[in-house]
Image 1 (cartoon, rainbow, N blue to C red):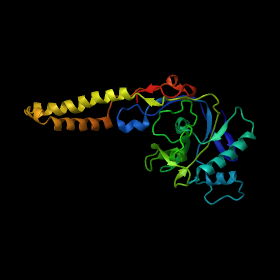
Image 2: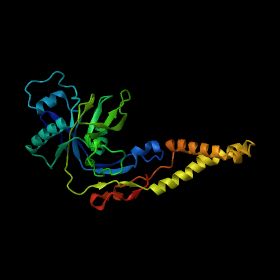
Image 3: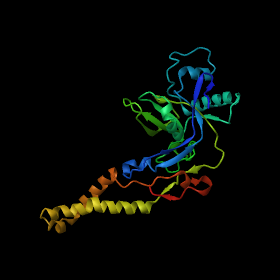
Image 4: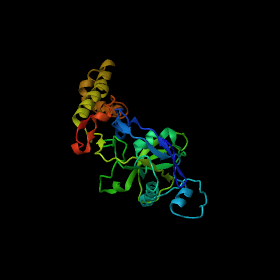
Amino acid sequence: MKKINLNGMEFIPIASGSSWLGNDRGGWIYASQRPRYEVRLPSFYILQHPLTRGQVAVLLGESDAPEGADEPMTGLTINEIESLQATVQSTLESMETEQSLEARLPSFPEWSHAFSNIELEPGVVEILSDAAATSHRGGMMDGRPRPVETDGPLQHHRLAVEMHPRKTGTHATSNIPVDRPLPNTVVRFVLSPPRVDSARRVPMSADVLGNLRTEIIWTTLLGIIPSFLIPVLRGFGSYALDGWANLLFGGLVAGFVTGAIWRPRRPSIPYEDGVQESDGLFANVSQ
């Protein structure tokens, strides 16, 4: 695969491959990062650097280079992004390429797969093409962007990657509004093969009964039993009977605190265990 140059924008090739996204830790503070699942991506192309002011000027047909032409373009709204995206797509279609490609913002799987090959300044927020979501349930397992599937306020939000202001390479994901300009937000484009088959997705629903059973067991073992056992071992066995309500409450609180940080790891979802969109998204998966 060779680099593709469009109007001065250099897209570098990223080889196809498989990667794992998400987190399998069981504590409830990791709930938004679950489940851990496998993504299989085709080869694609991505801008090594976020879109600059100068590149935006070229796409808009401006003849004069703007001030700070090499600086990242910040504060673009979704309407402005889609307009620039259409221009890139039009330019792409006028060229001869080895395969059919579509120009758009990268999905989170694509961004993660290309992470070691791209550059991003500390403290910036990069807007991705995925719709906002509260967890990885329903995530796309072939690397395509997660579509907008809500009519509420979140339809105007997109997934974004926020780079740590001081620690190079450290990042976190969040959902941000894209219907208005925001400071420090940048974008980059990918050229990726269009997916025409039905999507393979992470099962949408969690195994609620299984999770509840696990929580009861570990809250009892790590919270309630020690709460009653401690006064007995210290010679205050009568308090285990007289103060049972206080001990039970304390055990439940201890179980809740430990549940925030630790619970057994949850199952990861390999590609083969995903569900096709046509099959529905309601298979249970312990999360």
